[in-house]
Length: 131
Image 1 (cartoon, rainbow, N blue to C red):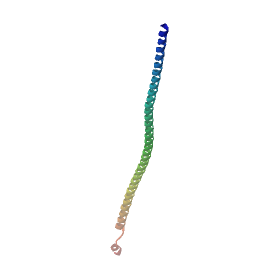
Image 2: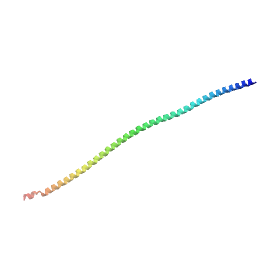
Image 3: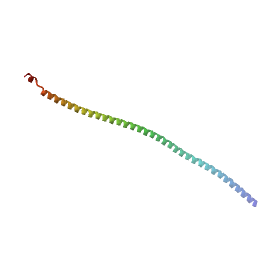
Image 4: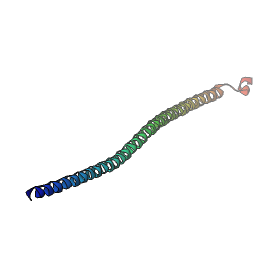
């Protein structure tokens, strides 16, 4: 009786071990599948972050190029504006020079007219010469 009980116990233990081994293998397979799913999900998120980072880098590079081009264009406009201002100053100088020249020429003209008028008055007329 004891030997039969022992045999039944060992058989039952053996069946439980086998069942436990089967469940352990199933659990390992489920854990492996879970790990694969988690890694795939994480990889897809990492891949998305990497793609977004590359896009940001490309946009940043393009923005830097656009900024450099805008800076060059602004510098060209400033240079053009400086040249225009210088030309306006030169035109203003020419206008002032021409006004000064005109004023001097007017003074000379008045002086010559005054001198000529005085000469004409001091010159004896033909009638007075004939007398």
